[in-house]
Amino acid sequence: MSDLAQSAVGLSAGWTPHAAARGAVATIDLDALRSNLAACRAVTGEAAVMAVVKADAYGHGLVPCARAALEGGATWLGTALLSEAVALRDAGVGGRVLAWLAVPGAPWADCLERDIDVSVSALWALDEVCDAARATGRRARVHLKADTGLSRNGATPDDWPELVAAARVAELEGLVEVTGLWSHFATADVPTHASVAAQLSVFDEALALADGAGLRPEVRHLANSAGALGVPRSRHDLVRVGIAMYGLSPGHDIGTAQALGLRPVMTLKARLASVKRIAAGSGVSYGHSYVTDHDTTVGLVPLGYADGLPRAAANVGPLRAAGADRTISGRVCMDQVVVDLGDSVAAAGDEVVIFGTGGPSADDWAAACGTIGYEIVTRVGPRVPRVTLGVTP
Ligand SMILES: *Cc1c(COP(=O)(O)O)cnc(C)c1O
Image 1 (tube, rainbow, N blue to C red):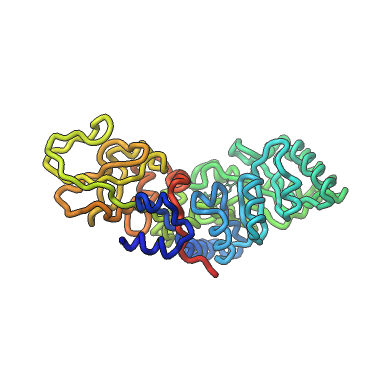
Image 2 (image 1 turned 90 degrees about the horizontal axis):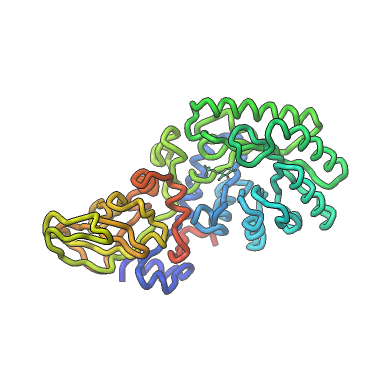
């Protein structure tokens, strides 16, 4: 049995029949997560840290990552969906929690009952939160979101005064407490982009207006990982750290993961399902977009686009196999890819590192495939078990 299989068997959490079938496992290193948070906090100084754990903690596992983040010094957790925040509480996770993406009829009352702060960008949401406060007898903790230039969620500068005034009225009625004022960057990964300075100043104006209306929030927050690490003035009271906590770079201009002192949290591995010699001139995988120019050994890696490997990785996706850095040969299939191993010695069952410790990084994958590291880790599919290392008892 390989080391990988042994360690996974020893850690039965996450060891499933799927893993036994192909040795594919995403190991999640919570020591790395805690160390990445420490590296961020060393830079961000006084600001409190919100660990962003939306989308199953970027594919790493919601609850173990949230717990590790709190151990690593985060005092807030952030999710997109209200249901993700509810799942945290129902698993017994503490800390402050903010959830920010909702449609009319979203489960506001479930959040209030669980001491979850909710984000409000529009009057309809404030109305629904006030209704939930009346229904539950709980005062809602609300972060008002300003659109300072992303044109995504948040109230525009035109709509901000009315939202702030209505929130202040709801405060005086005892229905809500405005605990936060916040916004989100469009281009913080390029700190010199003109929109960064523009958003900082629109945010300052939004804060001043809210102050004038009598709001006294606990936290003002604007920075994601890129802002936290690359735009000091954006840190305010709280920074919302996602990608850097998972050990990936927030963008070229901020620095590589290595330069930022970040370690990969997720390592995706599998075991070769087949190793064989094929002749020069053989077409490899669907469409024969790779043709061997010499007699060679090919290995079959049992992971494909159904597991999150981008189809754009055809002939460019990097991996570590048979003791060297290699590139996927030919197209990515639903469940498998082929890699040309040349004349290297290999056997079925040998371990392959797709990305993470001991192999290329998810950022290398992103660069090869024209995407971002976020997408590489977030899309690793549910058929790949997560084996979590470094869980504090
Ligand atoms: C996802 C997200 C973050 C975290 O962004 P990173 O770039 O991963 O640090 C912060 N704030 C909001 C509103 C988000 O949606």
